[in-house]
Image (cartoon, rainbow, N blue to C red):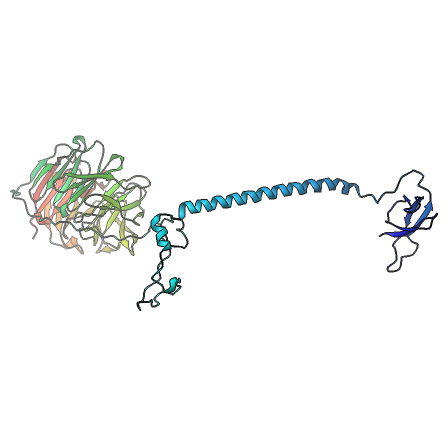
Length: 516
């Protein structure tokens, strides 16, 4: 704090500032030089008194130093230019950010005006037109179902894009993919199945142009459609006529999957090309893309008494339904999911299209029963092996047992070691075949019979057909397994006929079955 110093010559008083070191100062009145020094007092000063004692001596300091204010710390001296430089940088940065903010705001405003404000003549006219729907052109905030000027209850309009003031449209958010679906089999045009005008008192044989590969039943059991890969042909057997005919449109090379329905046939070929044909004419209707599954489509199935939907499945159980329309095929939204099963098991469909199976042909491959329940896929495990669904989807027939559509065993197990039994359902109706292991001379064979009582077929008085030579090779006795029997044995009750496609798939044998 400053104190008053008295000049030793003229006794004039003038203020000087406290300092740690002595310094020289000149009297402002007489210019006499004097030395001023501040020192701590011996006793603490009283309140309101100076903190230091002031001593004034005539003459300048011996070093000749002139008057100087108290020196600052070196650090303070160093900090001063830094503060000045830092303040300048802050000012520049603040200005730059402010400029960017202003420019960005102008750009955003221009973008909004360009994309969201419709300045067309019609919209401008609408915006300037008086609003006659409200009195005095005042906006209304009435809640829903409040009476308007006409005394009617009308809900408030939904906000959204359109003429007039208000917020513009928000971002387009795609709807979430559905994970639920309805399994609704499509009815087709029924075609009557009657016995052919052939004398089947003895078996009749049809030789195919070459061995068949994929086989599928359509027309509710009337038609057996086969793919002949070496000829790139489709060939169809008509049970009511007792003969075959070849499709007029040749296929591309390679293996093809077949799924026949009531009036149409689906062929899935290489490169996921799906072709739809009329049945029974086998005239191609259109080509489209098949369903996109994670590991490609490995098998397809469709109810033979329906026109879809068709189930497609890959080797790891990823599946999807496809609607097969007159002019195009589409995946049923929400039907894609995993139905389980191992890599070697294709899918099969009941004739009514309500039950699907995923199970192997061998005696050790268990079956999964797949249905739609509460708009989702429902998969039920069962103990039945080498299995095939009944036409009505209520039962599953397999190796030594029959189970319900919920997996529960009907009756008791049949057969055993050295006495194997297989059940195969008819292509329509409720009849089924029983294959039993037997001896034909010195070799193993099967005897075949026709049954209807699924509760206790072993005690039923059935129609016995005995050992049929055309069935040779359908059972691989060394491995104890069968070929896919639903692609070789076709019991057609309405036609009173059993059709057998031999193990080599190059010959059809027709036999009369007197089903009442």
